[in-house]
Structure formats: C-alpha cells, structure tokens
Image (tube, rainbow, N blue to C red; front, top):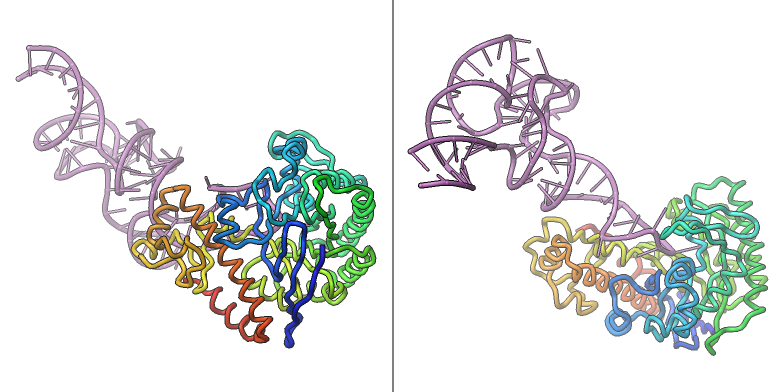
Length: 376
RNA sequence: GGGGAGAUACCAAAGUGGCCAACUGGGGCUGACUGUAACUCAGCUGACAUCGUCUUCGUAGGUUCGAAUCCUGCUCUCCCCA
C-alpha cells in the first residue's frame, strides 16, 4: 500500500492524496461506509459503487467472527468474494465492541472475554487471534486490537487503558508481521492512537505508534461522549506527530461538521454509522440542511429529496413519497434514505478534496458547514 | 314478530361505585442516534393553565356524599330464532 500526498491547503492542515491498494486507489480525504456484518445495511454493492461512489467500505471483526464465522469466510475466499465487493475493505478489530458491548465483556491483560450478543456464548479475543481473524477475513486494511475507553474516563483509567492498548498494539504488530496474507494481495495493519481527552497521553500514544513504522495510523476513542472542541484538540495534537507521508484515519466520526473540521486538521479517512443508521431512523443529510423526513411538514412536499441530485435516490423520489414509505414501514424507504445519505457523505468529501486542490478549502468549509447543518 | 349482546378518546380495546382525564395496542406529533446488540430508543397525544382548573365514557333523566361503572326512558349497532 502506498500513500501519495498531492496537495496541502495553505490556510489549514487539510490535505488530499491517493492511497494505492491491491484492490484499487482511494482518493483522500475519503468517507468509508460502514458494513459491520459484511453488508452496508440496505444498500447493494452495485449501488455503493455506481451511485454512491464509495471507494472503500468497512467490516467488523467481532461481528463477522460470530456470524457467519471465519471458517465460512475462509471457504468463500475472503470477504471481498463473499460479499461481492471488489474494492478495498477495512476491518475494525472489535476494539470498539469492548466499549459498546460494555455489559457483555471482561478485560484482562491477555485480551477480552466477550459474551456473544447473539447467543450468549463466551469468546476470547486477544491481539494475536484478532490479527489471525482479520487475515482470514482478508481486509486490505486491518486494525489493531485496542481498548476504547469512554470520553468521561478519569486520567488514571485513561492512562492504564492506554498502556494496555500499547502492549496489545506491540503484540498485534508482532503477530501480524509473523503471518502472511491468505488470498494473494497485500494487507496493512493500522495502529490506533488512544489517550482519551488527555493531551499528554495522546502525544505518548502517537509517538509510540509512529515508532512502530506502519503504513497508516488511526485516531480512536473520540466522539464517545466528550465535547466536539475537545475532540478537535486531540486530533490536532496527534496529527502534528503523525508522519506526513502516511494516511490518517479518524475512527467512527462523524457529523458532516465533524468531518470537515477534522479534514482541516489533516485527517484523510473517516467512517461512521451516522448516514446509514440515522437514515434508517428518518434523518436525511442534504446540501440544503438536515431533514427529519417523519415530520408532518413533508407530507405534501413533492420536491426532490436533494436539489443537488447527488444520486438517483434524490432525483427519482419526492420527500412526500419518501415520508410515506418511512411511515408505512416500507423497506424501500430505508434503502432510499441510506443511499441518499451515503451519497451526501461521499459528495461532501469529494467536494472537500476539490476545494483543497483549488486552494479555497477554508472558505468553502465555513460556508458549507453553515448550510448543511441547518434544520429544515 | 320473539330472544340476546353491546355503545368508552383518531382506531381497537380495558375499566363494572371513590386510587379514572380513564390500562394497553395501533395511529399521530416531536426528539435522540458518531470504529452498528440499532427498520432502534425516549417523550407527548381531552382543553386551557405553574401547582392546578375545567369539560368527557351513545343520549335524557334518576339513585348516591361520590357514577364510565347502579336504575329508567330514548336512539343506534350487532347476533340468534321465526
């Protein structure tokens, strides 16, 4: 994998580049749709490619390990073949599930014992077996196994948690480097920089990760309950330490505003469930502002979903029709909302990239945030 | 013609003397959602108002300190037998 830096904004740390993988190129900054269990919910791979213009999607180690299981993925020849997606894939390690499944797990030095949310069975995740599982899933980018502490964690806990994450990271690197890809294409391991909301911890984490000299780096443990301003501070602290010639991935973020702010701080890659999950719950991100399609005010609004026409979902259907579908609990409504929101997110990062290249990113960012965050 | 059952808020449906402005669903309205245990979750849904006040349980009366609940008339609906 190779990262080529193409341009930097003169008024901010924003940058654009190209990430080259064995499954094709990724133009950064990029948003990566989340496909936890091997599918971006309610969206066909074909739509992801042709309409949404996604360049890379996510999968999740914990979820795929539980179902369908690594045996089946291995027999299929890896996740790309299994789910019909021939572009790059990134898998999260299950570290986030240490956080989100807080009630069903126990953390030890060795790893994490999870109780399956599906059938209650017990499973041990270690840095070593998480690397092995991700080899079998076959993602182009695999993530280190980390602990993601809540944003409100006190310094003592954050420090202890970070030190554990760092020991786990070293074990991940060792195991990853001792093993080979199974399907004939290259895989890259990204460390995850933790440190909660504490600057000195973030700096230590970033320096430690950089010393391991990997092909890219992730910033984790943000947007987990802390203030947005705090999150931006942490991103800045970390990005000043991360190398210029490697991609930087901000995990799990975020709102359109979060993404544009983080781009201006030098982040290259994003993922978030917001466009899909919030979309399924009736929230639409448009170039004109945010819509709750369930609101009565759209009942008789026969205008298109987004005048910008970001995909067929916008141009083919009206707000009134989409509201009807959502109200009637029709599956097509979920599809349209998901396709639209993902199209919007991919449009947003594409535009950001164009404006970085054009040299007017900062101005465009301010204008765009104001426009797209309005409540309609 | 005879016999029986029933009428409760937008719909369905509990409640059968005080704890009832009335359980629970559905529907409606509003909000939340950030490396997806999430087509999920929360609040509101008689009217005004801060506690609170006022008008409701087909309809008209009655009994009672007190009625959606008991009694009588009326109106309407459904079922069974002729």
